[in-house]
Amino acid sequence: DQQVKQNSPSLSVQEGRISILNCDYTNSMFDYFLWYKKYPAEGPTFLISISSIKDKNEDGRFTVFLNKSAKHLSLHIVPSQPGDSAVYFCAASGGGNAGNMLTFGGGTRLMVKP
Amino acid sequence: DGGITQSPKYLFRKEGQNVTLSCEQNLNHDAMYWYRQDPGQGLRLIYYSQIVNDFQKGDIAEGYSVSREKKESFPLTVTSAQKNPTAFYLCASWDLDTQYFGPGTRLTVL
Image 1 (cartoon, rainbow over the protein chains, first blue to last red):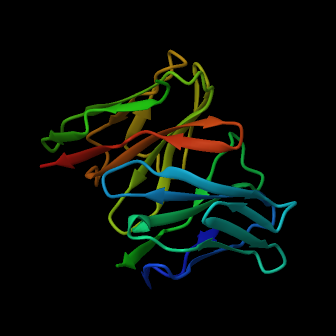
Image 2 (cartoon, helix red, strand yellow):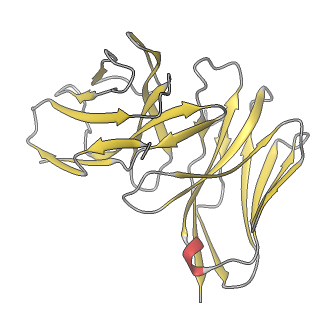
Image 3 (spheres, helix red, strand yellow):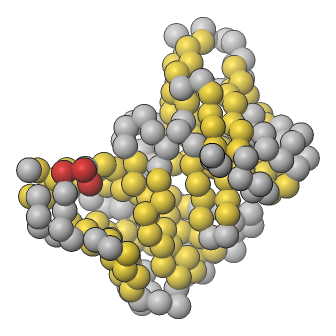
């Protein structure tokens, strides 16, 4: 049973436009959410995070929104750039798990076209 | 420079052989993790360790073993019991609220 889901395996966006990546979760005990960016054959790099006490966190071109009632979060990238093309993973922690474990979604491949 | 190193970047082994993947960190992090990524899939947790001389199984521990004799090192052994060992393996460590990842090792079993 996947507790964190990214239902769109891929997304294509024109350069300069907004990219919106979505993530849904089922465990209401998750209290911290993260987004990672991953290029092929490299380790994921941390992008941005949000605590469940907030509904929005912004860092430059990246904004994460959290809707706790819907158990949904999204990552907005504005404006999108070709270098943003990568696989994006959302992850959640808490949920009663010990060891600060993260539960990852399956990833969304973002392609930003020049 | 502080960080997580994994070696080698690419590793080839014959079927039936055990192989050990290295993970070293000089970040002074207590917790370390091993994940596996398969094409088109997310990251799945193999093993994790919260402290030296202690480790716990993750979601897909069968066919793998680990040790944590030093804080800086968390090697992963892929044994011959692992049915589908070809994958991209990622090591991570934990600081505050975030996991930081190494560059990964691509293991191919021929």
